[in-house]
Image 1 (cartoon, helix red, strand yellow):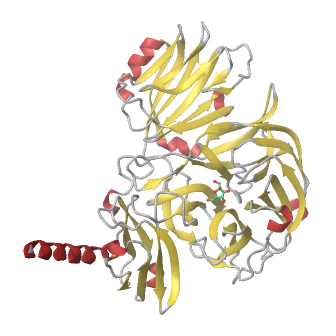
Image 2 (tube, protein in one colour):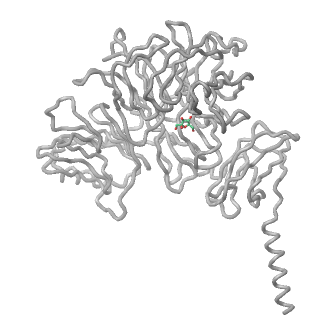
Image 3 (spheres, helix red, strand yellow):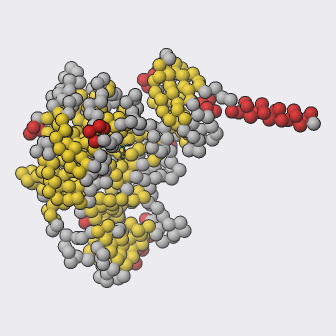
Length: 548
Ligand code: FRU
């Protein structure tokens, strides 16, 4: 009996010792990173960093109490030599595992992880969604993005940041904008204020200005921040917000400001999604904004830009789109967008919230877009990706003017053509592709001709990469009508990465993206199918890695 009691008492003390954990730790920062263990099974709790009694940051994290699923990190560069108190209001047993290092946990295998896309941008750790603040400045393409640095699911919205000289090789920098007392950092855009209209410039250095939405429980308000060191560090404007339109719209949904300089009017233009469409605002100084006009029929993440038709700079049209990429074509006078035709789509699938770069030199003149690929990477400590950068153009087609999208020429450096075969039967083509089915990345360009409709296409381990239905005029279930209406041919340029597939049809007239998913147990590999089809041309390209 005594022994039993003693055992029971021991058990209670043991349980107490396991669950009573100090809910804070104090660390003197001497290294670049803090590494934090995360478990998706753990409830989220609030973690706070305090320096000299003042809150330095706070965020939600699933701090692993037991074996972590993966590690995330905080860049501590700005806090070197300081003493930081870290507190956590959830199960705090993981606090003692947080450690300082000059490397992030897993640094040695970074970008070589099994399911890490090899020619697409992904973040080192955590979640990404929309591209933000896309701008070219002094030789660098800046990609900011919706980011949760502390978990591979959506939360703690911040602006992550990466730069590239060619849109292929990216260098991830420190988080640019973190949540503050106005809210979390939702999507937005960036401009260079060459004329110092906002007064943020210093000693001749023009400010890079980010215009973003702060989201809080009550409202979504538009704010600005500026950087004088090419986007590396940011100062938020002390009189934020610059727009609060909740009352006017009787809606919280007012977000994702897209700003650009409208040269003919010598003023700034903002396109803001408000409740049921896109509102055009104008400003002389990026701080005071006037609502000018509103186009209904869009949701989230606006863009608006001018494009030449068929490359003719004297004949231009304006394109307006929303997060889904459906677009309208029309005219714009600096205050009002007048839709003339639409809505059309040029791309579907996993793409969402795409944005185009601003400030690309006139001598280049391209309109380059990147979109969020809503894709998973099984087992990885990160989630989401950016799809390939594409150039957007307007071309006259049998149906009128339409937008085309093709991978930018910079992507060519990735591809090395290893074979090209004309005039194959489907079974010849399947034999040629046999050795490539397990390649972790590949580009295939194929033109197939249907001679006995109804549908035909290409599978990879059972997944329908291309499914052209000539009877219903569908490409992968979306209506498609080729330029030559009597044509029975279709060309697909297919870009396969470890977790994604992007397909560009007939020179970019239509494109789509999807997760790379093989049917379990399927051994077929690449497989052209369809009744008596010809593979008129087949090309195979080896694909380089952007991370080597
Ligand atoms: C689109 C979106 C935006 C918003 C952001 C928040 O994916 O909902 O409208 O700003 O994501 O992360």
